[in-house]
Image (tube, rainbow, N blue to C red):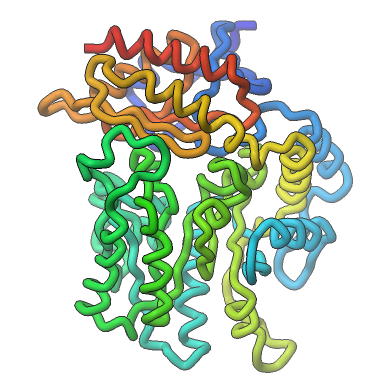
Amino acid sequence: MNVRPNDLDAYWMPFTANRQFKAAPRIFVGAKDMYYKTADGRDVLDGIAGLWCCNAGHGRPKIVEAIQKQAAELDYSPAFQMGHYKAFELASRLAALMPGDLDHVFFTNSGSESVETALKIAIAYHRLKGEGQRVRLIGREKGYHGVNFGGMSVGGMVANRKMFGTLVAGVDHIRHTHGDARNLFSRGVPEYGAELADDLERLCALHDPSTIAACIVEPVQCSAGVILPPKGYLKRLREICDRHGILLIFDEVITGFGRLGTPFAVDFFGVEPDLVATAKGLTSGVIPMGAVFTQKHIYDTFMQGPPAAIEFFHGYTYSANPMACAAALATLDTYEEEGLLARASALSDYWADAAHALKGLPHVIDIRNLGLIAAVELESIPGQITARAYDAFLKCYEAGLLIRTTGDTIALSPPLIIEKNHIDILFDALSRVLKTIS
């Protein structure tokens, strides 16, 4: 079936070179398991799980059936002052996946909204504790925390910030962990750079720690090109935050739900933050949904005053939408029945071997991997940053492989249902492409 929209002009596409795309559009018309189907009838192996989100693969029967059934049963329920059973069931099941006291869940509709929610909870929490002066937020250079104003402000990706003015006041950034030559071509978590966490102490000295509400980081900085935390780095951040009464927020929008071979990066790194922002893999990308996990003591701090008073003036029309909850519950069932939250651990060595076999190919200056994530960093063409990776992106698409690029780094993060033969196909296609780009 050859399907193509009649007119491409009306749709303003996100994070896309619209004019370039519409001159030579790349259109998907179907998806099943590990593959997309293009408008011209080709199969394209999904090397990036859609947009880091389709962790259970595409067209999974249990998720499809749950959505169909829910649409007929209860399509929408108001989120304010009303509830439905699946929201409470989902929150309980999610809380059971988290270690320690991360046992309360606030539902959102995206990673961006989860970040905004976590930042607001942090600031409001300190105010309720009698420390209303704690309003400063600390992010990290090269961090990506979505595209709303709070997330852009704590984020550290220049292109996402430069057009939008001064953003949210009172935000500063610690250094990123990329660039130590000793860590080039590391397999897994790199050895060097834990001391970079001490940059938070520099900002504490500059601003006075009693003014800082929270520090937010991605355990793995995926959108900036799979920048990995050095051994001991996250533990050191936790210790600094504890020392100064600062809340630590993990943005696990990408690393959550099995990407590293554990339910969350919290488990993988053995570091328990105060708040965790999630989305993407929560519904395997099928319906927009996000969630924020919060420590019990934070939730309990809000549960004060008259019982009839609203404790937190925040939420969304579609928080805990019944359709999204049904999709999320079916996604959790699929993860559990197929052992997908641990699958990356079983495949990580095979995946790492395949990724690092690209070392020595033209223009490859670094390879990084963790769980079922990998990055192949290419040397940039002088004066044309992004051009080389974008050329690889187009050629991979023509070769039947979907990749993601950021700058001149190729990122890979496939559905967790990937088999070894898919890994072979993926890296064989990428290897052939890398040998052809100039």
